[in-house]
Image (tube, rainbow, N blue to C red):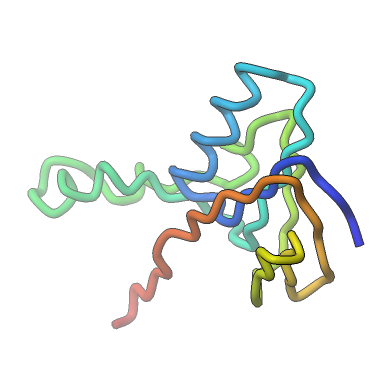
Length: 112
């Protein structure tokens, strides 16, 4: 079991932004972002893709390239949380926290 001051569930635009803002305010925070994805998609540009004004390939980056440097990236999927116990259960273990931010985003299914 590993403990962090702040655990963020989700490494999409919201999770990355929250971690970056918090670390900008206090670089000594112990922040973990839990997300198994290797790719990061800049979803706000998708409206432009739908309108034919932007290339969808330009909305994709590696997750590592957008991860805040001082955040710990836990590359696991969340199975459940237990807020009453301040725990997050993942495919790889259990993490405890002082504060949790839940922003798992959407699950992509390009073949649908």
